[in-house]
Structure formats: structure tokens, C-alpha cells
Image (tube, rainbow over all chains, first blue to last red; front, side):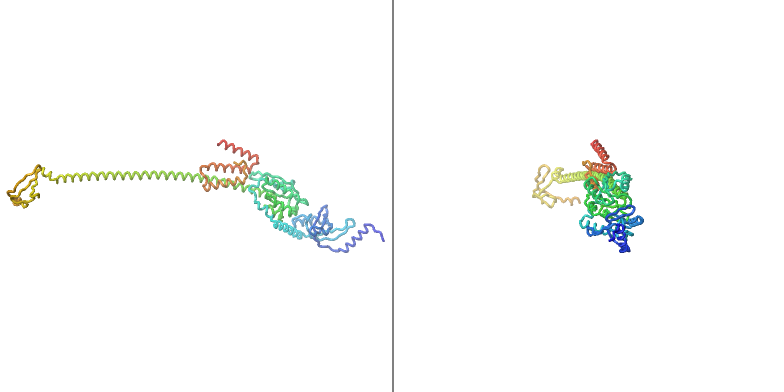
Length: 414
Length: 71
């Protein structure tokens, strides 16, 4: 048997592989690791549940990588990196020194978009099923978001933007900010953010709101924010979370479970400042109502008092007037009754004098006399006969006589 | 009087005073006192928005001084 050098053997393998795989293939796989050193070296895996059932090295040559990764980022909104599932076109290649590799020629981002959406949907469904998806939203936005916990990396431009905006707000509000440092991209970002959230939870009594802001511009990896673990940590945080990791187009799971979300750290700051501004407006309106209400109440009380005083005055005056009229009436009545008495008395006096006149004694006094015949007063000559015995009553004493003659006065007069 | 009420409790108290005054259910005898209390809380909230904790405490001390002098 001929002895081959390793190079000769590998040349043989290469020629077999080249002829066995003469064309390109469309393959789906998950990126298990991704290392860019001029060229992009990947480890691709195929998992069933969590068990890896296939694994292979792959490479994207530097000449193609720049364009390919930029296109992918633009279309899928995320970076090529660990945990991402991709659909790619590749050729199987074997190199005498570097061994078997897939040479990736193209990546179809729409597959990844779909995969990410499916994954996001699954996480959201799980959170919904567990009843914790809207837990942070249910906390409501704080009345005054003044004590702010910030989850970010200390060197991130986004963190600086947020701080600048908060510090130089036009209303002069003072915010107390505390940074809970976390990695915002890469493999360890998920775990790091969860830890920061847990720390916020321990200091919840000193925080009105927790803000999650991403590092730099829009190119960082959003992938880690489609995370069940982060979402769960947000759900169980007793402080409302504002997510500032937003992307132009995609809404991550973290955005979905947060109390509020904003596209940029500056927008997060605006949300917070607006919140405080709303509170101050409320205080101002209460102040206005207090002043207005107090004035109104005071003037109502004054009016009531003055009405009371007025009606008191009126009733007293009316009472007095009534009494005066009544008195006047009494006086009038009194005057009338005294007149009445006077006239009555006069009447009485005149009657008395009449009565006196009528008393026969008074008539007798004046020299008249009454002659009785058989105890009947003699008023006419026809009442007596000659020879009758008569009794004549004088003022003083009586005369006894016998009639001797009579003369008719009427005849006499004639 | 609570030394450092939360915004929430301060606002609730102000709201209840304003409501009493607007509904005229406040006793005129205590009106001045209530208005003074509400004004104190308003000033407290406002200064708390725009000052640090220490500054707020200073403002509070000034308030207490005024109150004591007024008594």
C-alpha cells in the first residue's frame, strides 16, 4: 500500500468532497458562536429541543461579510450573532489545512425575521399564560417619577444622553439617578440585565421608576431583549419600567412587558420630565382651585352675614313700624271712645233733667196741684159732679174740698 | 403634622381640602387653618420637585420657624 503524506490524503478528501458536493445548498441552522477576525468564523448547530444533533464550522469571507452583515442588520434589525437562526446558501468546502467548512455565500434575513417573531410570540404567549405579561403595566405610571434607577452601561452614549436631558430639563426639576450597570449586548447581556433588575428590586423603596437604555446607536444587538428571563424580572419588579432600547421597527419582548417604552434615551427622559410636569400642573390647578374656592367661600360667607344682618335690620324695623301703627290706632281708638263716653254722659245728663222735669213733686213745687176724685186725678170738669168730695195734693200738704160748681174752660175761652 | 409626606399623601390631602372648600363643607372657623395647611403642602411639593432632599429639609425648617413665630 502506498504511503501518503497527510497533505496528499487531505487533497484526496478535498477532491472527493468537491465532486460529491458540486453545487450550493440552502441550509437552516442556529449560530452557536460567531467570531469576526477579518473573516467571520461561525459555529453552526442544529438542535432538537436543547440537544445538539448536528454541528459544523462555517465561514463568511471578509470580502462578502461586510456587505452581507450590513444587509442582514438592516433587514432583520439585529446583528448576526449567537442564538440567531439563519437560512443561508453555502457550499461545502474542504481545505487541506483548515478542514471541513461551510462557505456561506448568502443569508436570507426574512427567515431570521420570521424565526425571531415566532420566538418573540412564544415568549409573549408564555408570559401571558403565566399571567405576568402586563404585571409591570398594572403598576401604573408613578405620580412623580423623580428617583430613577438606570440600567445601562456606564460608558454608553445612550446613558449620557439620558442624564444630560434629565439634568438640563427646562423646568428645573431635580432627579435623583442611580446607575445599575449592565452589559447591554453580547452573550452575557441577558444575565447581566436580569441581575441589574434584581438589584433594583432590592432597592425598590428608593425608586420611582427604572429605565433600561441601550448603549450606542441603532446597530447594537436587540436580540437579547427578546428574553423570557428579562421579561419575567421586569414583571416581578415592583417598580414601573421604561424601556429605552427601542428600535425603529421592532418591538422586543422587553418593550412589550415594560410599563412604557420609548425609542431613544432622550425620549425616555422626555417621558419622565412630562410625568413630573403633569404633576406640577396638577398642583398648580389645585392651587388655583384652592385660592378660587377660598375666595368664593369667603365671599359667600360675607354675603350670608350681610343678608342676615339685612334681614335682621328689616325685621326689627318692620316690627317697630307695626307697633307704631298699632299704637297710633290705639290712640285713635282711645280718643274716639272718650268722645263716646262724653256724649253718653251728656245724653245721660239731659235724660236726668227730663226725668226731673217729669217728677210731679217738681211740678207741685212750682205751684201746681193735683186734684183727685176717688183717687183718680181730675183732668176734666166731666170727671167730677157737684157735691163730690175731692182731695187736692199740694207741694206741701193736701186740701179736702167739696165741689160747688164747674165751668168748662173751653166754653169760657170762647 | 407629618414631617415629610409623600407626594401622593400630600396631593390627596390638598385635594380633600380643596374639595371641602369648593363644596363649602369646611367650617369657617377652621378655613384659615385648612388653607394654610394646603398652602404648606403645595409649597412643599413644589420645592421637592425642584430641590434636592437637603434643600427640601431646609425649606421645611423655614416653614416650621414661620409656624412657630406665628403661634
